[in-house]
Length: 636
Image 1: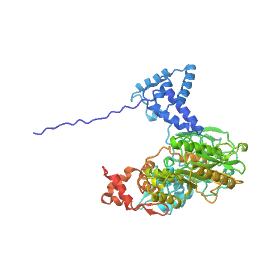
Image 2 (image 1 turned 135 degrees about the horizontal axis):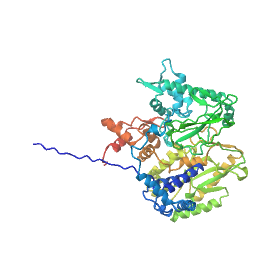
Image 3 (image 1 turned 45 degrees about the vertical axis):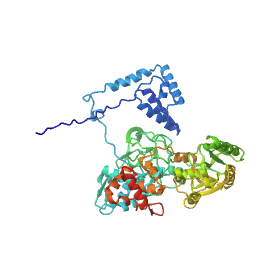
Image 4 (image 1 turned 90 degrees about the vertical axis):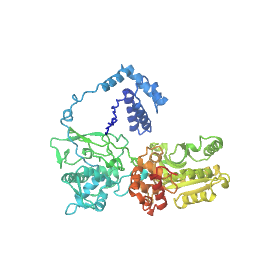
């Protein structure tokens, strides 16, 4: 006799979370965050953290003082909220009524039967046409397929990448892990295929425009031609300082100091009594029939722009384009722009400081002259007094990279804004011998050199102070000297030895005087942090603000970035090797899956990966070590 037993399945019932029970506080924090973002202030991140903390709190807060129980709410922020609350109540508002009305709405949601359908909500809603950003990956692929397709209309991947590159500002074959760019421009091909603009066939794959893709590419091509054949090119010429060739075209750099994260942008498209049509894209006519720059529609890519660096930022409220305004009848058209994070490398207005408009100032990290205790405190106090008596201009501030660097600081008499400081290409990392040993042991030595090399400052200097007896360093002297020699010869750092702290200050003072002589009579200009430098490396400089943003350690890390940092903790695994691994396996799970699939050959899976300029292979030892680390459940 058989018995059957019924097993009850556990069903998890989730309840949709209610809206924030403190809507007034939430509203004010959002306003504070947006205001700080418009001013390009770091407070936007503080307000953002406080906002997230408030939204997670399930109870009603009766006063601003009660906010102190939440994370990221300090005395200053509570005072701001208290002031806003007092003003709100003085104008007849009530904190309690707002909270209760919101909660009552959440507790009594409309029934499913009473909810209107999508078509009932807005019968005039239409799907928005996908239009890629000008000079993005998707844009370049469409233009290349449109202009260079073979007789049968198809192009293979390699040919397509070469033909599309002149039409894009991003690389089709290279990524940049250091700047959190893990996708090349080729990644946008997936978007084009999903949007049914490109057809993929065969093995090896070849690509062809669909009918809708041909239509869109044709309109983009015509819009490009009309734009740069018009008199508007004169206005662009004033901005860029050079004429635009017919094709391919160098992008116009626009500032992006406003909020670029708006999920939707409304653009008023002017139309006259006789509107002209540019192959399906409505554009306004002017009195002379010439297309004006302000009449262009803002377009943005929807997938690739999340990952790749953009050199052209669109701002619906402000343009760096000179054009006469047109005032015909206004017709509104909505353009959908995907939400995207602010790129890690910002493109700002070009800064130029002429000879005599700036001073060379030594910047000292605040950690070098304050804090600590014991003998370290005494040494920092001595260093602080030495800088006060050094006879050269210096400024103590928090540095995100290195311990000392030099800036071109605009003079007050020049009338140039004080925040337009340019960093000279020299950065100094000071270490005592015992610091060198401890940093080698815990891995900071390797990480710091990697950050210095990729900071954009092309002349890094290691300033090493002798300290105590070399025989008592806790590591063989030969090993320490070998690490320093590698820094000098392989990493191409300048290494400077001093006997004590006073000698280090003397070196920095002498360096400041020499730099003042070198830059006397020279005009310096700004460049992007990741732009390649040539013979003008001494006068083509990074803004201090951009250097600080790019080099800060407190940036939110992606999974791939964190994975790369994890790999670099292993002995013998440099930054270049980690970069090569995460290009192929961007997450730990992808590497683990690949190792499981390889089964018996897992230990040699990574051995043939190439890294660095010399294209050297990672090798069997590291490959076997990683295979063991990411496949065994219990390490011995």
